[in-house]
Length: 301
Ligand SMILES: NC(=O)c1ccc[n+]([C@@H]2O[C@H](COP(=O)([O-])OP(=O)(O)OC[C@H]3O[C@@H](n4cnc5c(N)ncnc54)[C@H](OP(=O)(O)O)[C@@H]3O)[C@@H](O)[C@H]2O)c1
Image: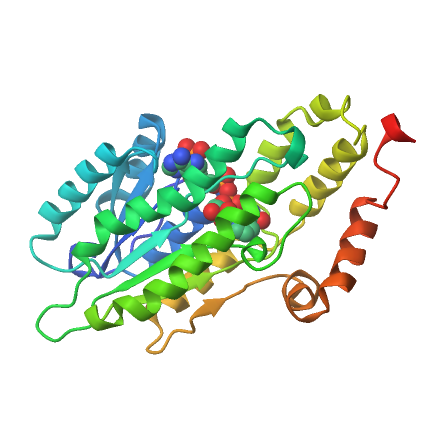
């Protein structure tokens, strides 16, 4: 990655935002967009090497923060550093983007893997929001910034083999809906960004896992087949830059919508699953994943 063209306005004067999960994919595109727009960005990563790479690429407009969203102590230390650097100015944006998925047949997935997805996607965003939220409160009658959560189509519907991921994203959306109403008294806006399929490194991470580890279950090779199809669909998804543009809108529009759902195929990837009768959506998923009753995989054929 080469150094980015920095805006004319010194970022120290611009509004400040914290973005989690900035090492790659959507998070990386978001910090790029915010720095380009003259914001001061605090970007969370988990590895020193990523922190050094971002510092070198973005220069003084960006300060890396090192924490895993499951590590409360590290999040608190990062929030203290941000508080000190803001010197009494409010934080204007908090983008809860860090997240992960680990698809599997639910009944055969170890509980530790299910727990990890809930801990990172839902409890991680919870801890980050609770810790950085107090930096966002309105002062002197000014509006108090915006909290964004990175949900997914899985935040309103359920994909087969992604029950923990969808549970975490449904939870995130429920939390955001409550907070939007509750935090309005502090002048803090809360916005859900729920992209469809986005072409990010997440699909390589999914493709790199051993999808055949479930071959001995009644699903046989059906799961591995579904994963290779999903990973190749993912690589043809919306660009992370398009999602970053939506995040920019959500942070800067005077009256942001409560929920944005950027997608390359909005009808197929968003609207259909939300408005069609549930049983019809069941049949569409069954066809897409080869999940007919009585046909599970090689082992049961
Ligand atoms: N790609 C899609 O199709 C899609 C669609 C809808 C929603 N989303 C959501 O968009 C967000 C970003 O995903 P992406 O597609 O850009 O994937 P990605 O490239 O894999 O980025 C995920 C980011 O989250 C970070 N992260 C993962 N676990 C973490 C933890 N425990 N603590 C702190 N950071 C952690 C990763 O850091 P490391 O590099 O250290 O692992 C990385 O920076 C996620 O919330 C995802 O659910 C993605």
